[in-house]
Length: 69
Image (tube, rainbow, N blue to C red):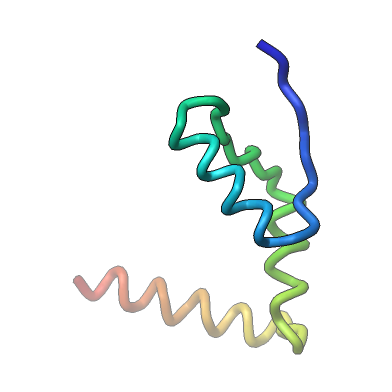
């Protein structure tokens, strides 16, 4: 068995790979994300940077809701 890492440039190529997987010619495994990679991905989706104050307020509201139960 040979493992390859492939970067998909065209979304249509993913459909072709999925068809090969259905024929059991290949197996597709999503890579494990490192925490730093996940943080970078999340940050690129958010247009505005949250301040420390906003983060603290959000954490406190989630904690309050959790402990009310």
